[in-house]
Structures are given as structure tokens and as C-alpha cells.
Length: 55
Image (cartoon, rainbow, N blue to C red):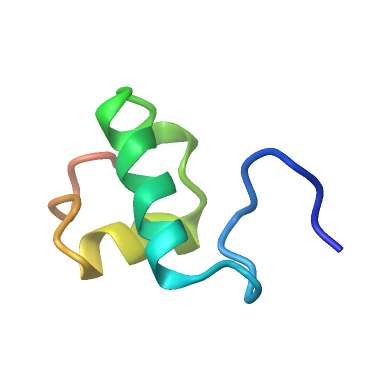
């Protein structure tokens, strides 16, 4: 079972919830905190441009 906080794209998280969470992190300037899976999700859903958050 997941705990409250920021799950990293686990299978129990709906696409809508994940998109909202990832978008919020991007809006807050926290792209560097995205997991690799969330980063790819953001790119794939047009939330980020590839390479934008790469360090």
C-alpha cells in the first residue's frame, strides 16, 4: 500500500491523478525531482519538452 505523499507513478495512481501531480511539480519548478518514469510521462503527454529538465 502506498503512503500519503508523492507516489512515483505506481500502478494504483490514475492517469488523471498522475498528470495533475506531474503538472503541479512542473509548475512549481521542481522538474528535477521527477522520477525517470514521471519525466517520460510528462514528455509523452506534452507537459514537458524533451531535454528541458535534463541535468
